[in-house]
Image (cartoon, rainbow, N blue to C red; front, side, top):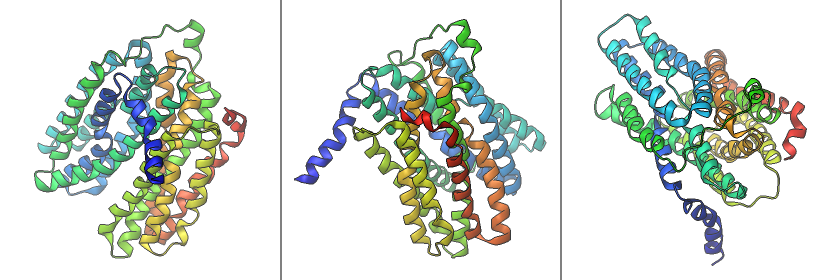
Length: 404
């Protein structure tokens, strides 16, 4: 009886969220359209390796892709604020689809390798942050007075992110194994072609083009203190994610349990999914900023245990616990940002919060590989703690910003 009441209370706010007109359309379309985010890197690696038999070339291509999105996504989001999301999606996505098809044809037909890099660069120049756009649409759908419901929508978006990163690689590897190496890339294109029009044509959630004052246009949103307070620590913490991925695979391989690496990383994502659901269902009295800070501290403390763990399944349990802190991190950071920037800069601001993660991710991947090769997987597991400690240190100048 008690469990039943708790369950009803937990999901009541989600029922309320999906009663909002347009909510189901944005949730489903956003889920479909962002699937390629978790599929493209592994799909490109599998495809390029099938042709060239070189992980180094495949890895270099995915690194170029990741670094290009650091610049392209925020720029497109800035254009979306000024010209509208539909305008951006109608230009960027066809550009992306044409470029990725060109990449496939160049690789398949043995074109010079420099053309592979050029085509993947153009592909990622068409990269937009679907998650930022759907989060901005939730702001438009939900009454400003209902801040709890908006917080729930952010938690739901984080839950979708977790599911995408769990399901995406599994679907990609499965379809490639069952069909042909290029199938993973083609499936990613299909998700874009289905999901993006469902977002672009949904008028009810489409944010109006906000007229901004001339002084507003001159002032860069990057100078916003609350954006810095959330975005800088999150960017540095991005190094933790790549380090964990690589170190867990290496750790499992050392234990002759390489096939279990996916399950261990799945436990990490599962922890994030569980906490994202719970975070969105609770009517918190603690401010978003203090919760953001608290979850970052929790991630750091738990990561300190990683290098001392010698059993793969105990590591999975530790990662599940850290996942409980990862899931609510962005949903609690975003309200600080969206409540402090004008509507004319909101999509750009939301994108900037996470756009720097690939930079530290690339650095972390490089460092992890060198450390693991020289000192073993356990040594590589020190990196998540180091990045998170740096992220925590970066919050010190902004402590007063977390009060609201």
